[in-house]
Image (tube, rainbow, N blue to C red; front, side):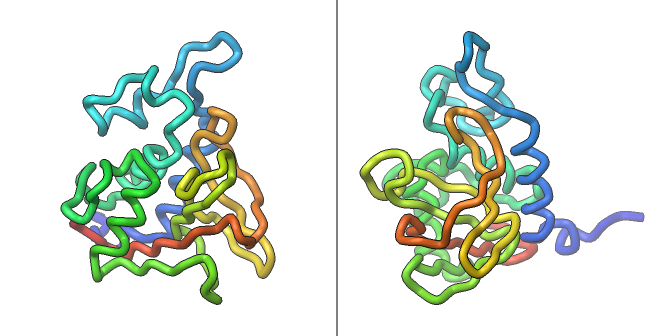
Length: 176
């Protein structure tokens, strides 16, 4: 039995893929180990493992989206700053494509599994510095699958606070 594209390519499936990917223990160059980020950065042919080291949270989100069946080019026309290995590009993409929902963190938006979250000032004192995929949402926190969490993949609980820049909700069955 063949699964219809629309049935498989869902935010729910994206959350499942992201949760599993976060537990693979992807990592950059840590503890004297060679990076194992090749599956994540393979979509970005001009990017090397060394260039990606410590900067791959957005590439992790892209990897998960592709693994879940979403067909998105690495640099959609809406991306003016960079390709989707950069957090700011995800915001540009979401704000420029009317099919995608973008909700600012200040809104009273309730995130769901499979939404993409963009943060400000989590690791550095700058905007668009990190992102991940929501696995679960409660009133005060979100459980998120993230890449580049101390240069490893993992699942973390974060507060719903001023560090959340916004949420991206890609519609089920989305194809660019």
